[in-house]
Amino acid sequence: MRVHRTAHRSRFTVFPNEMLQQVGLRNAPRGLLTFLLSLPDECRMTAKQMARTTGDSLYSTRRSLRELTAAGYYVVVKIKLSNGRFNSVQHVTDTPHQFGPGDDFPAPGSRALSKTKEPSKETPLPPLLPEPPVVPRPRAETPPPAAPKPPAPRRPAPVLDSRAQAAADTLLRVVRSEPRLRIGAAEAARLAPLVMGWTDLGSSASDLAAALLPGLPEHVHSPFGLLQRRLTDKLPAAPAPRAAAPVCDSCRNPVRHPGLCPSCDRAPAPSAAPSAGSARASARAAVRAAQEARALAR
Image (cartoon, rainbow, N blue to C red; front, side):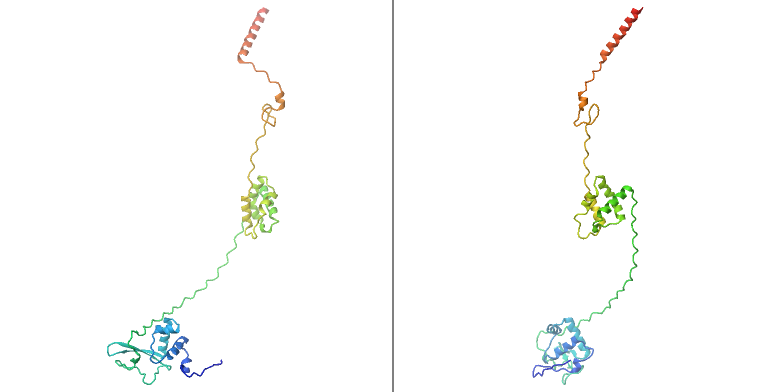
């Protein structure tokens, strides 16, 4: 370290190295002491004025004054005047517990050192606030590492019949060409009932591919969920039931239009059945004819 000093001819202050290099004295009270020693002899400053000038907080300034008092560099003496009022005199020294000749502490009632006290409304130094107690913070204990959770048991694949197994195989063939929709056999088995709903409506593997593969997002986080959603939302509507084909009213053969077929339409109409009255008359005539024949035979 190279120290550069300037030879001043006026407006400078000399400090002893013992004060500047004293071990155990913090820089804050050391700097405040150098500021106080640079002031003129008859100057008077309160703690608030010191804090405002040095830029430190009032609490830090009062703490530095307490440390300087404990080290013997600063002391405040209260003197009772003849009129009964009290006067506070600040003493600052560059050598601990030593003051210059004639700077002895005045006796009570004396006004020897009160020449710097001008008739004003200036108040003495405010009482020093006690330092806040230092409460040691409890040291947080590091919790022991948690035991690793056992792996969840794999969900067994459901047992499928031949029709459901065929539907699961069809779904695996459809999604095999798309890496983002790779699913396992167990997942395909759980989706088999949805695929059977498509096949019951006449959908083929090409219809499934057209519904499941286009428009996929860049990253598919759950292929099973996406397939389940698309198989449910894109299920085609059931076809409307077809009307029954018309049949002939006579022979019940299929015809283009409701009514009789051409063969039944050309056949002669059957004779009308005899009425009940004509049938009774015929029966009576037959009885009379039979009676007449028996009479002739005698």
